[in-house]
Length: 240
Image 1: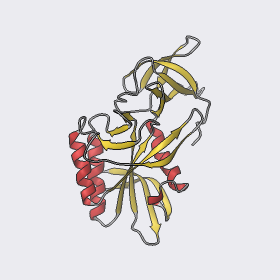
Image 2: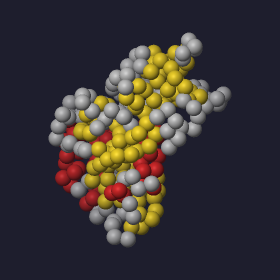
Image 3: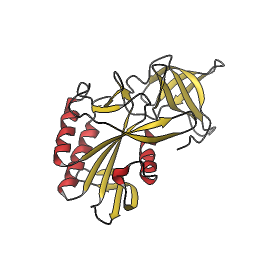
Image 4: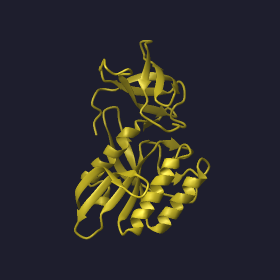
């Protein structure tokens, strides 16, 4: 997936009100960016970090510039734009990177399903041998130590709801899959964040026991493009 416009560098001053970030460009210009991320962005929003954004040049937008990337620990890149996660997984299905989700003739996005008024990120159907498949996507950008990726980065009631919905689809005879889209070049493996949201971590272990399939794929990130390129190992029982 290519970034539509050239990304511009800046220095992060602060991220606030969830959807806003103040930055200073190299020529000293102060800008407020739209921050397309509803999470805590733990370890990805440190003041004085180098960031990259794009300018829509749309005068109708209150904040025409959108934050895309951040440099973490002065050596890794993370994509904080969580709106890209679903498209990255769709692209990785279509180009056969995600081998576990091949063979379906139809792919739909944002399909209503479940018992709790939910929408599934990706619905795969018309496989010759396998049942229809419900795919939930979660974006991972929190890295602790030694390449350990964690999800979530804050307590998530929504994440719990999605796990319940996926388990329900398994009981109905369908495939249910959770894909962690790891948009951080330093992360080499993924675990639930037991220390941040133990309820979610326990529910994830339970969901796997009920038949939900869980997988993680890591991204290749540059200043011009981002794509999923490799499967990462999972460790459900420990953060280390």
